[in-house]
Length: 189
Image (cartoon, rainbow, N blue to C red; front, side, top):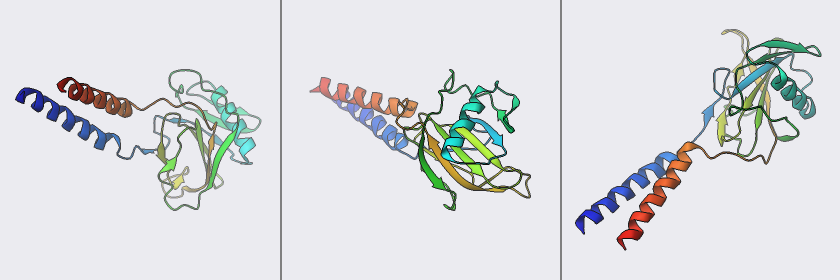
């Protein structure tokens, strides 16, 4: 009886720890070195939502780890395969936010597939990230250029709203540990 109670307490303690860890902020800091980085495009003009859909689709058509120019826009494609497969076509705009937010942190990307950060300046450009499955991201306030003269974020846009997201491993672990604790408790009863 004491052994069952000890096992139950241990299982509940593990579940509680996983809850605390699992519910902590899941924000990912995005930049050109992050796993979600798909690539960039320059020049960044024009920057309407419709134009940006075209920029995403042109970028994902470029061969991995190469640079190509399409209709006067230069695309620099990373090796990101969008969860190991072909990147889905960008079809519609979602949220749009001016870059006036001083820190651009905690951007809710739940349910979206792509995020574009558009940076101003003569050598600025747009960066595209594959954010499917993420809940919150941080964008740098400045990017591009050299260490002395980087360009400020003009705006960011989210694309393909309502797409299905895959639960994060931490969430799956949290649910699984809760079910194990519930099973132990139920068995004890």
